[in-house]
Every structure is written in C-alpha cells, then in structure tokens.
Image 1 (tube, rainbow, N blue to C red):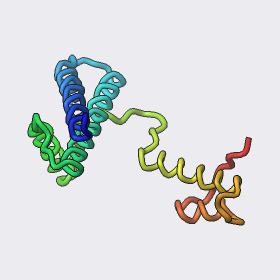
Image 2 (image 1 turned 120 degrees about the horizontal axis):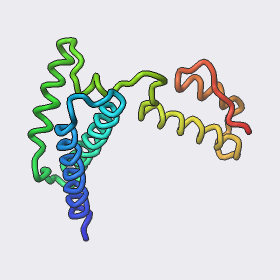
Image 3 (image 1 turned 90 degrees about the vertical axis):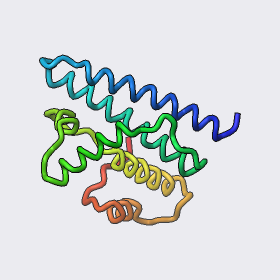
Length: 150
C-alpha cells in the first residue's frame, strides 16, 4: 500500500467519524443537560480537527483533494468565523465551555513536553546548560518552573 493510498484511507475513516459525530450532534434532544451537551460538542470539535488535519495532509503531501469534499463543514466554519468577526460567540463554541478548571490547550501541552524534555536532557548531560530552569522560563515566558524532581 502506498503512502497516498494509506492517507486517503485515513481521510475516509476521519470523514466517517466526523459524519457520525455530526449526525449525533443533530439528534441531541433540546433538553439535554449542559455537561452532556459540552461532551457531545467536544467530540464533534475533535472529529472536526482530525478531519481538517487529514484534509491538509492529503493536499499538501500528495496533491489529492479530499473525497468526499467537506463543503458542509467549510460552510459551517465560515458562518462561525463571521459570527466571531462580529463579536458573537457561536453556539457550537459557546456550548463546549463548562465551569471549573479549563483544560490545557494543545500548544500548551506540547510546550510543557518540550520544557520537560529539555530539562531532562540537561540532567542526562546531552545538553550543556548551567541554568536550564532559567532557560526554560525565558523561552516559554513563565515566571515559575515547577520542579520535575520526585
């Protein structure tokens, strides 16, 4: 199996998972409690993220346009973008947020991983840095670095 065929198969699987999440979202009862609504919306957003990433991968790496096309999703994102541009929070975004401690952002999780790997590399002697905590704090714009020591 070539990489292009594998990528196309992955795209089709992502599309099916997104379509399933889209149908599930449309079938939610109007009186669904906020927590279950937020969970369903997060699931839809995760499938949307996976689908868009798979589409970009297909086009950038293989020059293949996704099939089936994602016109419906792009139209929905366009409307949401216009809402945001007008200062309004779309329902698909507003319903995702729940009370309590917010989850970490993907970029934040990646940065934490990079910082931990850097400090561990210094401890292992792979990187020579006499003040790795100061380096990490400076590079990531934080004032306090929690110790990774146990």
